[in-house]
Amino acid sequence: MGGGRAWWGWPLALLVLGVAAVPLVAHWLTNPADQRLVDLDVYRTGGESILLGLPVYDVMTPAPQLLPFTYPPVAALLAVPLALMSWPVAQWVWTAGVLLCLFVTVWHGFREPLSLARRPAWAAPALLGLLAVACLYLMPIRDQVRFGQVDILLVMLCAADCLARRPWWPRGLLIGLATAVKLTPGVFLILLLLTGFGPGARPEQRRAFFTAVLTTTLLTLLPFLVIPHDAAQFWFSALLDSERLGSNTGTTNQSIRGMLLRLYLPDWLTSVLWLALAGLVAWFGFRAARRALLGGDMLGAVALTGLMAVLVSPVAWIHHLAWVVVALAALAIPGNPLLTTAAPYDGPGRASPRDGPAPAPRDVPPLARDAGPGRAVASGQGSEVHSRAVASGQGPEVHSQAVAPGPGPEGHAQAGVPRRAPDTPAMPQQASEAHIRGVVARGASDAHGRAAGMLDDPAARIRLAVAAWIFYVVPVPWWGVTLRAAEIPVLSPVAGRIVQDAFGLGALVLVWLLARRTRSR
Image (cartoon, rainbow, N blue to C red; front, side, top):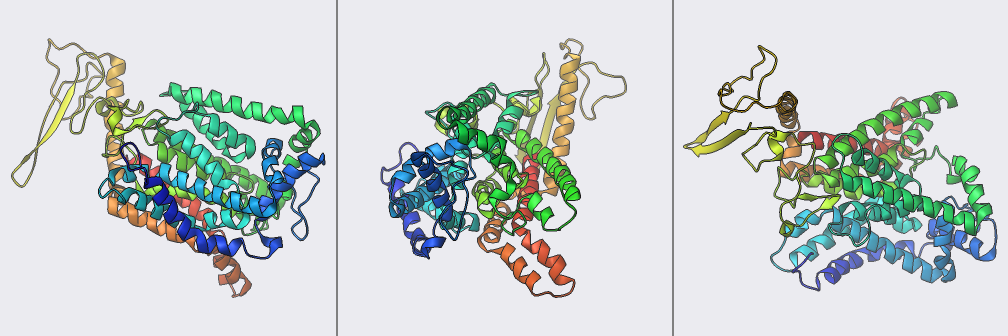
């Protein structure tokens, strides 16, 4: 709800979420005690081990679960306050925290449409509450409540770090904290590295990268001073044992490796295929995320990077797919500030419309960068291209004037562009080539955008997001388990296995759609 909103907006939205969460919370906090918030019990056990002086990575939760602590040692230190609470109090406090983290994540993801809902005064709070409720019943989020998981906290930290407009903390701090607590958010270090260095790099991304690395390093080294034996055991032993996380072949492992393991190929072949496919997906996903961020679409970049944490990780349980919340927002909301009325991009987050003009995305061709809608000015010396469309009668009449971009190879004149007047200063060769590349790139992008028309149509985008929401609400992978158990010839071993991998395959489709979205912009 931003400046000028009624003070009661946030409480109203939280109330909507809290009321809708009652059935879910009542169910999972009243189920059998040995099945209740079992992952929260793991965190508390880690904290209790610190307090009792026991080896953190040798202690198990009570039977029948017998789960070991699998997180970095700094997570055990941070879990000490949970160990100081009684078990019932810890359950309620953690569950409330899960709902609050979801609420903040939804606010950051859907902030642009929420900022447009100004009348009546209750519209934005009600819409925020309804969106949070819809996301609460996604299966990866339901599992946050069921198991007492930490994933939505990590999603909130990374999303807030990237998407907050005016953070009071140095950017990169929350990403560093999340990475230190659970290693998978380290994918955002890769995003910061790719966008902070190299062609088109942004200085603010570079600063955020250094802040995140410093935070992660300090929080990683701290346990060596406080619990050195446990720290050494994790980094040199427990971390290398993926079976500590549970059965890697189980349906709940929806990573690329998990899908391959369920094919039961020879171990060496599984490893080779995983490294190859994970490398390919990482190359494709991070490349698209970099293009999105440098093009002004931070939301798309965050969604793509979060999905990378799921797909390329050796183990990614269904509750790790909490990143779907951000992905749904990115699917539903146009992401390029040059082509939308949403608030413009401002550094690692998005600026408020009242903040004034935002800096132009650095990788947008010069033809579009320095222009408003319908006008483009090419960077260079004394060369500019003006294009405008004037509505006339039943159809648009386009008038364009252009100055040739300076001398180039003979015989390669641009069609429809008059030659430069003799008294017009010549554009440098480098600027000319950059201009031509920009024009060609825009032409290719336009063609791609026509092919991806559904991503340009707001109504189609919303329908696509709703379809993805429904897909992740229903327990599709477990239908695959049922189908395989039916032992129907051909159908069970083939279709059953595909359905069993549905959420992981769905994440791959989301990456492809979000990458097309960034390219179509």
